Amino acid sequence: MTSPLATRIRVMSVVLVVCAAGSGACLGFLLGGWQGAAAGAAAGSAAGVGLLIHNRFYRRRRAVALRAAEVDGHEQGTADVVLFGVLLYEGAVFPFIPDGVSEEERQARRTVAYRLAAYDGLPRAVRVSAAEALEAIDEGLDADRARAAVKALTIAVYDFRTGRLT
Image 1 (cartoon, rainbow, N blue to C red):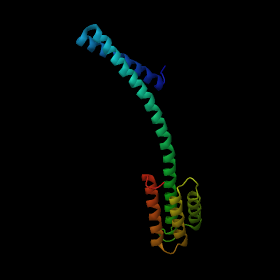
Image 2: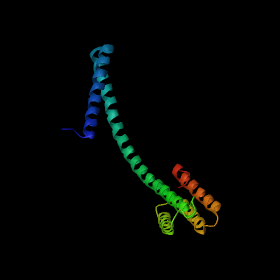
Image 3: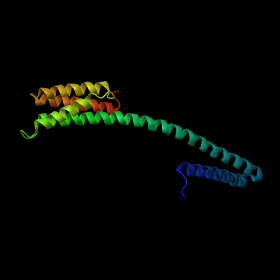
Image 4: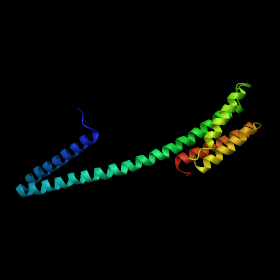
């Protein structure tokens, strides 16, 4: 039977406290006899208790940071998916091979790109850049303008990912 990880960590922490107290007592005995042993044991125990308190605060901070990272990761991942959807639609409108994409596939990619860009969880700057890129691609006349708009979307997603954009 295997113990849960939290139980094993607590047991190891208690063992560390006992070891710290024992080491402090031995060192105190060598330096000052029985009075030094008592002082060393007290100092070792205090260090061990401090370790346990620090461990508890660390776990709380870690849990808060993990929750924040999960939220940020979801938003950043959504922004990346919108970028990929727009890039796929751009590839359908301006294919490398003429007639390489059917009209049904182009329409399907357009629908997916618009649905992704309309997601409420996106930051405003990413949503606006995605709308501008989709508008430029929808016109389908100027590939350079569409690429510039997609590049602006890419920069907006990058800025959001690096924290320069909220």
